[in-house]
Amino acid sequence: MSAAPSAPATVQEASPNELRDPFIRQELKRATVWLGLACTIALAVILVQPLLIIFAGLVFAALLDGGVRLLGRVLPIGRGWRLLIVVLLTIAFLFGTFYLTGVQVSAQFTQLRSTLESQANRLAGWLSSQGLMPGASDVSGIARQALSSVGRITSWVGTAFGALTTMFMIIVIGLFVAIDPGTYGRGLEWMVPRRNRAEFAVVLDRMGKTLRRLLAGRLLGMLAEGVLTGIALTIGGVPMAMILGILTGLFAFIPNIGAFISGALMIAVGFSAGTDVGYWAIGTYVIVQGFDGYVLLPIVAKKTVDLPPALTLGAQIMASALFGILGLALADPMTAMVKTALERSAEREGETDDADGAGSGEAVEQG
Image 1 (cartoon, rainbow, N blue to C red):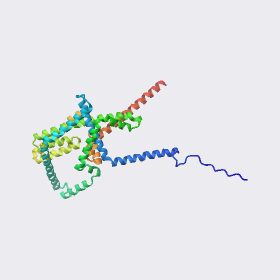
Image 2 (cartoon, rainbow, N blue to C red):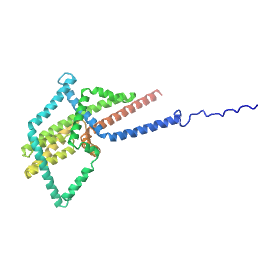
Image 3 (cartoon, rainbow, N blue to C red):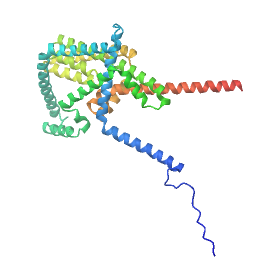
Image 4 (cartoon, rainbow, N blue to C red):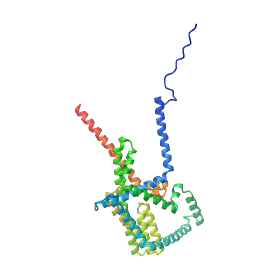
């Protein structure tokens, strides 16, 4: 009787298709990381507008938090009561301003629009007669093409309803964050790996201080430019001086570009009332911007955030091209926060290098 054939030997190693293989698991981890990074970038592109609204809410929360901290220096009461006082004072200021000057501002807005339209038509006609600009029909066609090429990002906030909805969401997010910023800060720290939480807390605290200082400087500059412009234009007899002062103060929130827009508006309105008034508007623009740029801003920059003008202008151009008007308004806060994070990273690397150098020196001495 012949012996039964023995079973063939089987392979005991892990299959390439099994996750027990260390090489397969390592490659799968790498693929997962790259896939997650690609998905994150895609979501950031798709959700860029909501992300900007959330960031604007955080900026508004930092503005309220700065007011609460400033009020805490003179009123030793709870944070909630101080926040309520800041909100009520802001609402009272806005409603009081619009109530006292509402009719005049509304009439001046209408007059300003008609004045700018007539001045733009006169300028376009003069440029066309000099051969420096296409005809009116060609200009209209170019304008329609430019407006039709604006992306979905900018068109979302282009309507009045979209702008009001965006503003409402920014205010609500800012109020909720300002009520208890520590809760949201701890939530962000919880999402960071445990070994990096201490460093992340330091960076987050410095970003908050930088943002509060930046906004304080912006508010001071807006107030100074708006008041000085309104007074100077009123003395010179420029029409719609009040609304021009208000617009100048609002546009001052966006340095460089805002000053150019407000200057073009006041010069156009000034020349609509006569050559002498137009020259007065030009002088007002030069003096106010010179005072703001060479006297006020350097003083404020020492106490706030020192952002080079070319850096801020470049960031505004890129942010406006990528994200529209909301990105333009938030370009400076984003740049200041990135600058703060990079400064902290460089500081940490310097501390590490100093520690390594001290350790090497001790080793040499012991040797």
